[in-house]
Length: 111
Image (cartoon, rainbow, N blue to C red):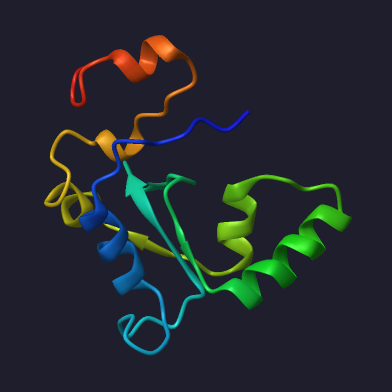
């Protein structure tokens, strides 16, 4: 089960969207963008170009692969440096998943 992310600052979405290509979405040539933490992709949140992502996901699923990280690699995703997205979300709430009611009741930026 994938956790939901109710505390994601909208400004982080804008940073991710600016890192992917397309009209009004920055100058990158990748078809996806995701935050980096310690140099590794975090699979959520992410910004995708729909058509290429659907095609890549279909190919991956047909081969038995269901990882979002594999999808990011297949799309040649742009990694958004931690310093860039943390400027919008210093507490890294964007990485906090909510899987239980107790998680939802916790502090927005607590550990």
